[in-house]
Image 1: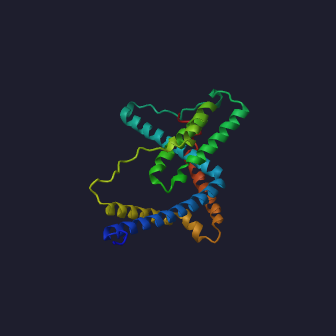
Image 2: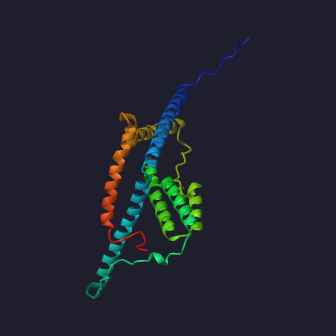
Image 3: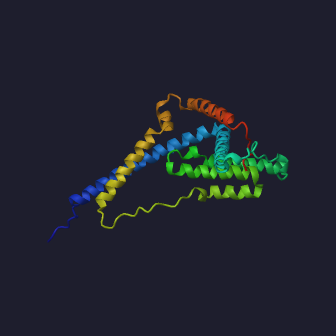
Length: 245
């Protein structure tokens, strides 16, 4: 009578099992670090709401000022000696904006601030590929808040919180059919190790793990943003939030 025997994994299968185990442990550790970092950053943002919003508004305005200067220089080059200087920036009087009730204005402000914090570029510092997209979304958000009505802002707010505003077209990265599982798993492990290194090197994670009281970092950030806001205000002092349309 033959005895029942269990299959013994060969060397290749054992290597795959070991790689999968390492990947699982590393993924769990990475998830834990990212969750702690994200939670800490949420606390930081909640204490810097006004500074974050004002800084982003001024950053967008500064870019518009720079673009206007660039276009002006280009026009000067094209016209040469016959160029006539355009005095000042185009101003749009506040009175030209449609009237809005106090309740609607409060609701616009609430939706705007909520959406701004949700997609602020600083929130995606661990995902560099999304920073530019977040900047585009916040730029559009500021434009709608300044020039659009409540209904338009509500629609964009819904678009943001649905997750569709931050979608990107994925890059094709299908695994070559002839590639071995070992190679794929090894690549996955290496990617996770790089992600882990980035996560641990992130400044907010270092603050969280190295500061005796991580919440003291709030004061450092306030000082940083106040300085940046001051400099941006100086650079945009000839423009306001309704210029450069």
